[in-house]
Amino acid sequence: MVAYRTSMKDEVKTALRGGPGALTMTDLTAGTGTCKNCRLLSLVDIPPGAGIGRHDHQTETEYYIMLEGSAEVEDGGTMVTVGPGDVVITGDGAAHSITNTGTKPVKMIAVIVTY
Image (cartoon, rainbow, N blue to C red):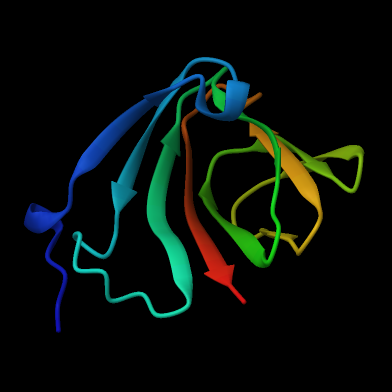
């Protein structure tokens, strides 16, 4: 199966999880529901100053696979800077947030795997 980009929907999210600004999420499964044990598989575009507010994950793990740009991420209660090639892993019971503090857009893939 191939999920073609032309079949994928972009969705603008404003104040996602209470975060600043608006960002765009693209469902990489093209709405097929073929991501077994996966609640989310999305390309996320975060413009400068925007982000996703602090939230936790219960019975699941979220991965942010950083492709472009730099951002501040809450990791275990500490703010750290991440960039291309980094992977943020937030496991069961942990919380995190992300804000684009750079001058260029952040592009990342977000994956939520359920248990």
